[in-house]
Amino acid sequence: MASLFLGLVGPWQIILIVALVLLLFGGRKIPELMRGLGGGIKEFKDAVKEDDKEDSPEKKS
Image 1 (tube, rainbow, N blue to C red):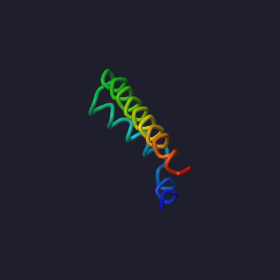
Image 2: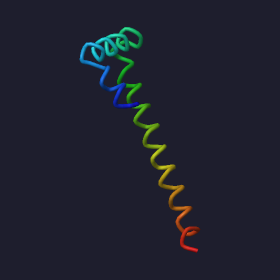
Image 3: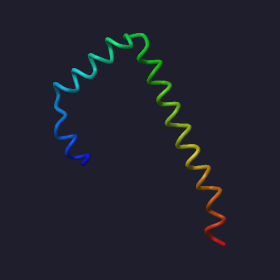
Image 4: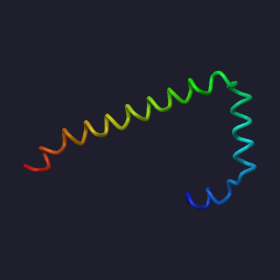
C-alpha cells in the first residue's frame, strides 16, 4: 500500500505541497515547526528506549 502511494507522488506534487505549506505557515514559522517536530520525535524515541529498558528484566526472568 505504501509503495503504491509513493509511486503516485511525483516532483510536481511535492512542489505543490511545499508551496501550500509556505503559504499557510509563512517562511518564518517553518523552522519553529520543524524544531517542534524534531523534539517530538526525539521524545518519542526516548520513551520507547525507556520502555525497552523497563521490559528487559521481565523478559530475562
